[in-house]
Amino acid sequence: MTRPEQVFHAGERAVQDRVGLPEKWRARAARAIRATMPEQHQRFFESQPMLFLGLRDMQGRPWATACMLPAAAQATPTRLTARARPVLAESIGLDLRPGANAAVLGLEFATRRRNRMNGVLCDVAEGSLSIEVEQSFGNCPKYIRTRDIRLPAAPLPPAEGARVALCDADAQRIISSADTFFIATHAKEGADVSHRGGMPGLLRQNADGSLSFPDYAGNRFYNTLGNIDVSRRAGLFIPDFTSGEAILLTGGAGIDWSPTRAAEFEQAERVVDIHPEEVWHVRHALPGGGIAKG
Figure: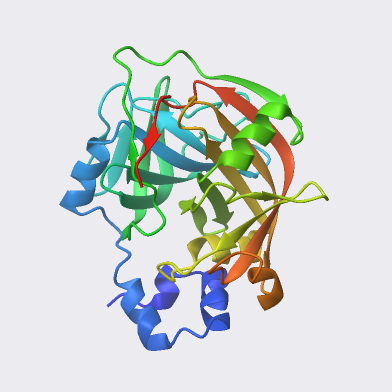
């Protein structure tokens, strides 16, 4: 029988304790996180035209990025292989060496279905990477905005990135209108990448140059918050589904547990603050023309 301490690390358990989750719930939740991918997750990942990744750079900083798949990924119970390169991999110096921690999120916007897989890179070649599975689990569709994402007939042009300041006009435009973003975090036990969604303005820009976003009720695993609790870092991938652009950033992160602060966002249970240290504006990060439907 899988014990919670074998699944949830100290940071995740600390957050679970702080919000008052009973041990009985934690034991049940631990059983939902598998060490291999079930058949339905394998087929799901193989059907996705793009994946969202959480990786660290050579300085150990987390980055969330995307990976367009010109050919279908291949999945087995213990491995996921994608014949593609993460967006901006070289520019931000991602650690793609075998043994490096990696996290994958597949999200089907039309159905709002999403699955996650965390593991380690086991084989990296020019134009492909394989990840050995350590954790595999699904998430509910809550807070996912339904979208019609139409893939272009021809491959996307290569992604073009430029390092910018947070006050850059393109960065301000994309961040202020975002209703969806992806957050990468890490702990010594591994990497994680997760989805965050809400209404436009989900990411609030503060006078001190930081960003804040509400943390809503979710699956209560607290993978993201648990990692932030121990590492104090996070990376964001903020897409513009209309233009195909994105903002990538990494920086310090913290959790504000103040009820007064949470009350600034409707239905928020707490607030996460991000202090960007490096920001990139990327063109051709993902297909443009995506239409939000609900």
